[in-house]
Image (tube, rainbow, N blue to C red):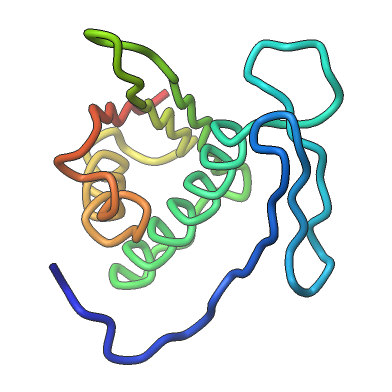
Length: 138
């Protein structure tokens, strides 16, 4: 396991009530209701939050890969992340798909950027070897 030498940022939240509760960040910028996946209750769920965080981080990692190549990314670059909550043998698991749109880039270049981003994105590193992850160019 890699030890962090220098902490750049620490996100802090206070959550109550689990999937039927609420979560608030220490700075107040995040203040949300939580609800179970698939319910009609107000609020979001941990899988959506994880997907949003991973998508944002992954776009940043694509930007780093592009900057190394002195390449301008398309303004409509997008990552649609799908995080599945499922069960196997009575235990809960996650799996994910990152569907990356890099319009205007040659498919080989787009694939190289996505593969490099997957090696550098902290969310990708955290899940590597722990859950099934698909990287799709769309």
